[in-house]
Length: 555
Image 1 (cartoon, rainbow, N blue to C red):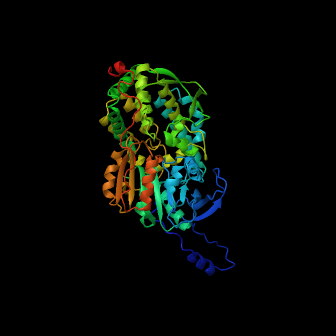
Image 2 (cartoon, rainbow, N blue to C red):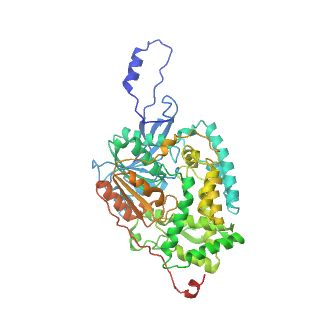
């Protein structure tokens, strides 16, 4: 397996060549030296754009330095104010395998309304990396050819049956990638980290700042472990520490986020939790047949979801924050969904991941209870299935799910089992609907857990907690169930120069302007506490006795 990588010393190759007889018939195999070559950018450039794009060529497996190469696609968004000498920000997305489409669009946009580019990047370059196996990197480990055609079948069936179809598709995808010569064991976090280190070296950066989100935080922490000398500061947003096995720990994580939400909404919606679980029981006993939809995108962004400031947002930022609202009321199809208790659980899980948090969520749940209209659950289920059965490739919103499988199969999935996950689920909850959702999500949908994505695992010691003195800003969303605070709060004790903040948000807190301001202050001065400038009070819409006092006080 990969250890700390050293670049090949080229003069040794030159000596070998000089000593070889001119007429010799034998050849000298040259070790692969990472190199960067410019290419045409894949995203739409602004007029007079200074953005540079290219491919980093590296070994697929650094344990085979004379073997196959792969190419890592990179976008370098130059400081809009010109050269400054400031260390760049390397942007590490999560997933693993998540699309970078939004990141490329956001960082290309230099309009005054783009607070993410203006504040997050400030006076420095931003480097966005399509991690190995993802997006526009070559090869890209998509399974959309196998998963996409199944969409029409999965909307109306149970989660368990949809999971079975997904696993069958993954078997076909795995075999296709293997037959194409892809060494799937090489698509792991250690190799991924070495790619980032090599990129910084070939671009001539002595030191870099890193912003990382979700799985990107685990990648960032691997960088801190093996390449601390090149890191000036680290931002960990929505943190997945190496010691956390998400397949085992997502059960307490989901329950923690549910508890956080109901407690936060209780003052305005005192019966919300009771009503939610009552609906879940009723749907388990008698599922509801509900017509859900895809919707046409809205042709206008005039609605003011974000208050006064949203009027001055760039369109790219507005789409990133409010894409779930950017749809007209005109459905493009009619899809029958059998709404069950586990699909109601799925609805809440998805809603709590949203950043900004949905201030109307308690009111939505209350309305479902009082009207019996489960249309929002059906619509959410359709979106959920679209995500897990992607039909796109590079340049789309679809994730590179083959890379997702490789990352987790080489680490977390190898060191647990279905029985262990079932045990954790039933130790933590007796709720049938929640347990069914957790079993489907973290066992039945996962080829790595089921032993159906065979790869060579990383050593178990790579799951040890990280100990580091690199200046680190740690950010978690208060409602996030993918990477809740209970995952990362203990990790802060091992990071001696860290600042830890819980922000009123879901997953990926840096979508918020106040968080970008914190990040900017921290990167400018990593030795100082950046402070939390975000709101600390939830602003729920509607509330207790909001026109329905009698109904509100009756369970």
